[in-house]
Image 1: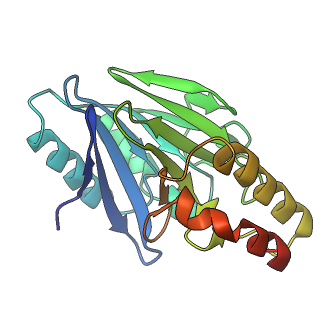
Image 2: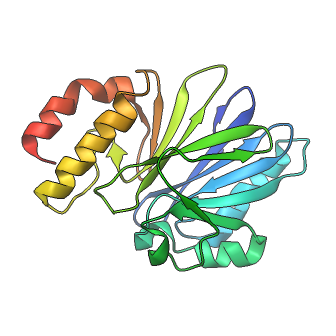
Image 3: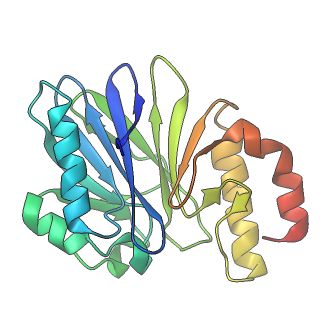
Length: 216
């Protein structure tokens, strides 16, 4: 199955699903410079190496994995991280409050609104508190089309992430998702979750009140 899910003006977006948890691993590659961002080295280092090979075959540039970003510290999102860092030498990034929970040292601490520049494209960190204290989404604004949000486990089709029936954590997460995603980006924004299928903000927006009322 082809890992390519979007070929945008400047970058390609690839995705594979790994592990019994159906974890999504995403790879952004700039078409001209070859600069790459990998999001969530969840599991199966060999499959992720295959994803890198797929990307290399599709660009005339020499690919360079500049950064491996982790959306949050949960074990199912980091199982391949040590092996991939060792194999590639890539730097790592995570939300400041989750970084201590990762199995490798974190080179780049991400706080709300931080922008990371790669050779030819930028990605913005959005801190979404509740699923974990330091969960982040990563947003790529396509200059020729909709934005793309890599939401980790904070936003899915049909609701926000698991807050373990904690009312305070749910209130924080629904507030952050509402204010920092739905209020900031238009309906055509594509949401790429940490598990399962993509959605758009427009498809989910009508259900925000329902999510608040049910409490999960």
